[in-house]
Image 1: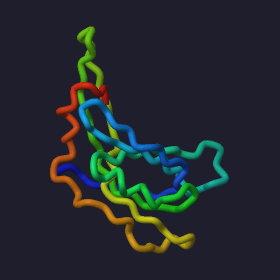
Image 2: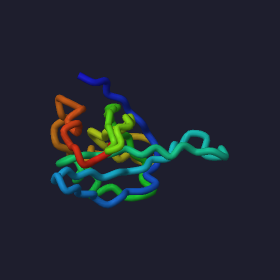
Image 3: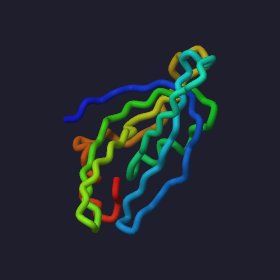
Length: 128
């Protein structure tokens, strides 16, 4: 089983659901760190929620503080010219909206966490 990590920040952007020809769906959310907000170089971290987990982001709004539980996925892909490329993805598993003081609100409902985090490896039409 892959390691699970957590990241807390401010929701900067929630992108629309993408559906691919294979039927695979994904939705990205971008969080910006809220530690040292006066800094010149904030971190903008994109997380991907896949398949049924895309609905986790339906009730989240930009500007809210949130904590994301995620796993790190990696994938090897060979392009039509035979060149091998490697992709890394931060796969969102669960999202919890936080109050301004950092305390937890009710977690946004999410499907059960998958047992295998590399399940996107069977998708041939995606380079990631």
